[in-house]
Image (cartoon, rainbow, N blue to C red; front, side, top):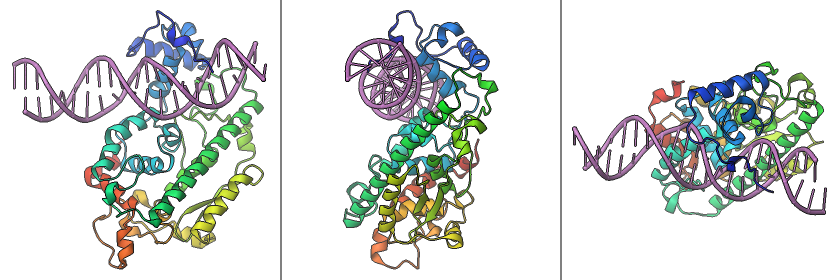
Length: 356
DNA sequence: AAGATTGCCAACCGCATATTA
DNA sequence: GTAATATGCGGTTGGCAATCT
């Protein structure tokens, strides 16, 4: 529908924020919460539109924002998620604690995209340009693309469901009046078993606190419906290490059928200890436990036919050929992710992973 | 030393969607 | 059901700093 007219008002200041303006905005939100962004500038004594205030807060002033250089792990996460989700920066940001969508977007555009292009990989499609990396297109790459597309659709559905649940939760908890930021149950946005976030859990093989500054999801602690009825998403690793998920059937029956499609495509699902063992395999500290993910996506990209070789993990010798992998077709398929891994590995100083 | 070029990122713009009246 | 309003998202830009010539 119609656009907000607030930014079209004459007399509102634009451009860089001054320390005084920052202080006013910060002080107001800390005391009253942001409430209605539209009404905030007048109440806070700012000659800005609400939109500008919201942006300043979410991208800069929020206390739970991590600034500085991206770690190696963050870089890989961005690349992987971009391959999965495309330019959905807010969705990607939900998987990167303390990073804003704007920051991720900027980093992608100024660093990662260039690196991919330099590697001969199309940053949009994540496919080799002119077969530079993985050879010419064939049935496998077509199937991989289809799988990836399907996965992206699935992730979209998950995000929508997540947003819907958040809304419902919000309604149930009767959050009718804005809560001052400092008095919220969690200054840090919650990581209450959000299904979407579980993707990253699988990526990292461990539970992590997701604190996306830009996440639009707001749960309200123990009163929240989300907390009362935690979702039980259980990752499963297929034979090709693809990550599978069990959803609450009462919510996501349709989505479940999508996964069955994938299961069918990917092969049998491992259970219990066997699954856990498949999550282990990479020596690289940060990658430990990630085999299920990198490998999962890799598996999909390779049509699930190639077992991921953990010796090719990020940080390991990407150029070292796997002596045990003698099949020409496997070599031809030298998976896309290895190429991606090599990009950053070859251009980013190792110490970058220990920054921040 | 100075002008040109490039890289970076905060902030803006406009569209899409959700919410409200 | 419709229109107005509010908010969120992603693309783009402007300006500053660093680097190059």
